[in-house]
Amino acid sequence: RMPPDHVLLIWLAFTPAAGLLVPLTWPLVLRTPAPVLSISDAKETLVKELRYSHSLSPAALDAFEELAAEPVNASWDVQPPWVGRFNLIGHDALAAALKGLRAPLEIAKLIIAPDGVLTAELDLFVGGAVVGLRFHGSVCADGQSDRLRLRLQSSEWFEPSAEFGVSRQIALAREKLDDTLGTLPYETTLALCFAQDDLCVLRHTAAAESPVVIRRVLGSREADAAMAAALARAAAGPRGS
Image 1 (cartoon, rainbow, N blue to C red):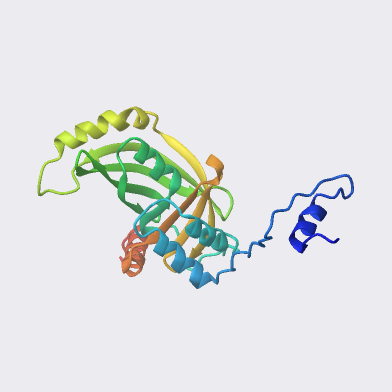
Image 2: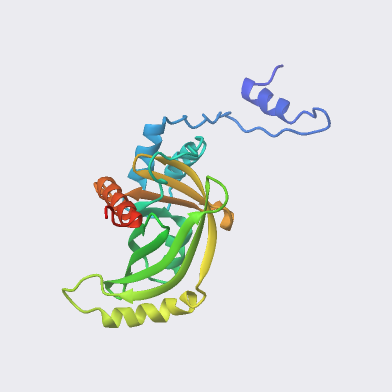
């Protein structure tokens, strides 16, 4: 008497083949590969998933990998794509570290000047209020077109709003973070994986290649171009006799 079909399949799955036993469960479910996203879909998904959190969800990470697989344009018409004003919208390692210290990240803003001077302002939620942490440093090409050298030189606390004082919360934040900030200066290398329109995605070349996503502040490109032109004119010096 022949066994039922599902019993036969299970029995066959444990039959030795080339000296190995291959386990099988019933019913057999084949996993459908994740669909390949277009560039525009991947950008939209990444920005949408990071709208309310700086940590990458599985969907955001898939979108990140789709963008990171694209070749990077190594030549820039006017200035490198990392120059300008940006919001840091995704950074797993930073978000997790601050959350662990009970000072979760609310907003992070970056200004990178054409000469590489960096100013980064982080809004942290501490003790029921938002306090500001400002970093000064630099960003420059690190010998390769897709490698950036990031250096954080110093930091300072500030009140992000003049409407009310947060001195007590700043003191609390300093208790949590000053030991870590005492390790400055800090340097790391970032790999530029994707740069198009208002979005840049990068990886730390160390730290298990932690993803970093920055998005240009809307409407700032024209202002940045005007600033670059003004700086170029100033560098050229006065004209005429």
